[in-house]
Image 1 (cartoon, one colour):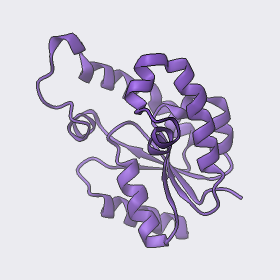
Image 2 (image 1 turned 135 degrees about the vertical axis):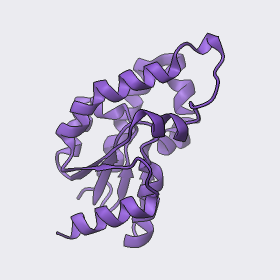
Image 3 (image 1 turned 45 degrees about the horizontal axis):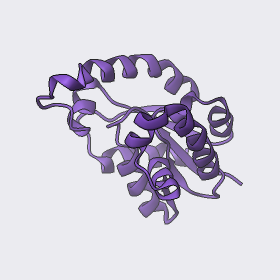
Length: 166
């Protein structure tokens, strides 16, 4: 058995929020792989990436593949997990929605729209580069792409419900 649906996309796309909306409507489990990682390993994803990104990615793979194997769940997949071949293989077995977000909304939703200390570098530029670099991968994994800019979770969920029923 597998999950009912996986949501992929960049940070700030709305994966966690839309997953919650869908899970409530469908009366199923909502699984957020970043939250699952934090519960399992007792460390935030941000801290794990800074401390040992390679180690984090290995553990993340296990968490995501486990979540995608849960029957009937709606899974919000961590944004970088899709780069892993085993995660890609697991995603191929279920319906995948790419929640596409532009730089302005992604920056606003992730808290990167304000002033930043110089020591952090060009964080918005890094986000822009990540959005651009992963777009092709997200698109290749997805059965449908839904833009989330300027939309609330309920609107996005409505579109997914209609698509999923077809």
